[in-house]
Length: 121
Image (cartoon, rainbow, N blue to C red; front, side):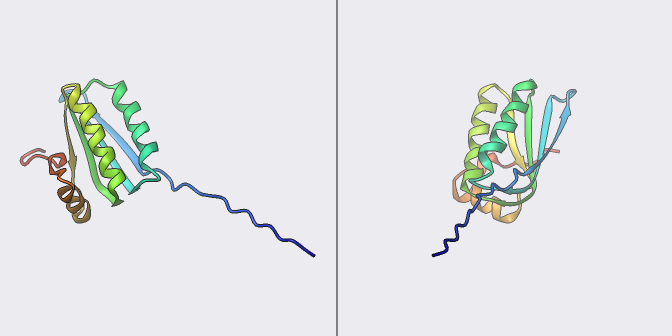
């Protein structure tokens, strides 16, 4: 009798692409995200973002999410935890440019306070 064994390798989707821009004059750190943010990618992205935030004293942190194609509740939870840490150190924090489905998710999770305040550049 011949036996065939198959191996399946779990693949972890790549973490969303991240671009970091620092404006030391205004004390603003902008992190732009592109790709998908979900339960598989949020932990790695969160760790990367915390490392960046730990290195720079800032007055404002802006997370530009306009390039996110997808975000699930794990991504929203990550944004909430990061906000707690950033605002706990006295800095402002908000998300800029969410697509309609991400805005909907945040509003339905009662997390609309994460969205960019009106009038911010």
